Length: 296
Length: 296
Image 1 (tube, one colour):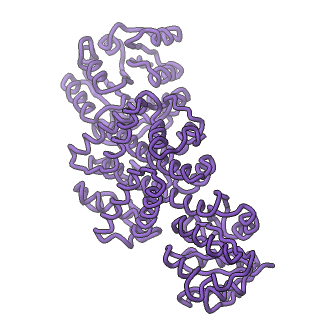
Image 2 (spheres, rainbow over the protein chains, first blue to last red; image 1 turned 90 degrees about the horizontal axis):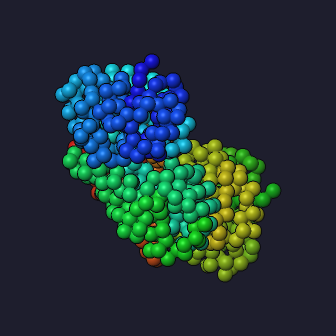
Image 3 (tube, rainbow over the protein chains, first blue to last red; image 1 turned 180 degrees about the vertical axis):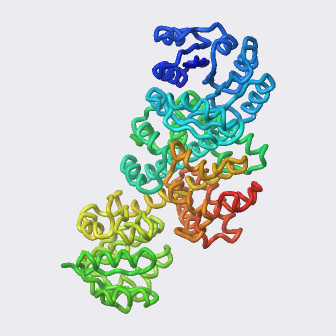
């Protein structure tokens, strides 16, 4: 049985690593803070001292990190993955980052004979726990096929989206659509509530028409005024900024994406950066003079 | 058994009237052009000479018309419904129009003792044929309950949304959300296609994430380049214009709605007014330099 490395044991990474253990793989892990690693050590994982060591001690390495800068540091920085790779080794990055960074890592590690896949996921923490994630993978198809059994221990669906970076690109396009769908829902429910329509009834009715994943994910949160983050405004704004930059570099006009990014910037200005992205509804409540809690 | 009047036998009105006939109601109809009326006459409906006559000959009258101006003409114009109503008679308008017009009709006919409900529908021609529409109804609750058996002959779900105009308001808010969701999908699929991701695979993948009714309704049409209208760009633009005007009157800022309306204006400028609203994707193809048919 292969030995798998796992770097980054956050909200998503920890349950993903646990599912690899449950599937019978032996695991070697690294996390910046050690309490998460401890939890896995009790379950049988080895703890390594740095990303380079994880890489030396493993056949395949997974990373699940928070942004481009952290990914670059873990891959290319001091005691990074780069200093541990062997020829032919596959590194799978499940972070949501820019396709440009994904391609850069694939090139840099490729020059050392290693293979990098960008494999960001769709799904919540709960889906990560249940092994019910969706992987969108960019890179060589034969490498995708080699790691497919590993992906299948953590997710229900895995798709090969094309060459290096296309996994990251798919994730950003998906999040762009999600953010715009959220603003569609926000403007719709504000409009309805302002004229006296019951917001819960409104959600029920439009679910037979202008339905969306965002109505399903955020409808109840908005009604219950639960702005605890499943996905923060700051993270969505980061993703839209990446998407906008890429669209610009590819000369694709994205007017609606751009506006929605600005709306989230306003939510951040109002202090909602670390609340759930659906807290943008509170900005609209203020602008429209809809009493906070009227959408209850 | 009651006798029901039906005015406006277009794409939606004709199958709706047929379902009333099938449910055993006797029907008296009027349409500006007579060929549609003929079809119903063969099935047992009576044909009246004008809206006023339909109203005189019926207990409850339904209207299904194309826009505010036509609705006003049929209700208040020469030989209009107004000149045939009796006290207590219920008129149900299923057209998609401004809530302001809905309220005006309720007031004008109310002064003659009649009762008007705004009851626009969600659903396609196919759903109208199958009796599977959703009615969103504004007006007095007791009147909603009186006509509920009639609505149930034509639709699966009927909701009382509140006072006069709230049915129309719900429909406009739903269409606003739908149009924004469509633009979300359009920007997402253009972005993906431009960087070489297979558009059919993209649709499959995002259906597990940023899914929406619009992806379901329009995904296959866009892939097949079928721009035959289920709902034209011109009609959606009309609805967004109504929604924007209402939002403005109610002092609700709706930046995303406003931008999406402008995007559809651009599609109209390109000659797509009478194609399906999803033809806006052709504008984006041109702007982004995505070869027409690459989304195939």
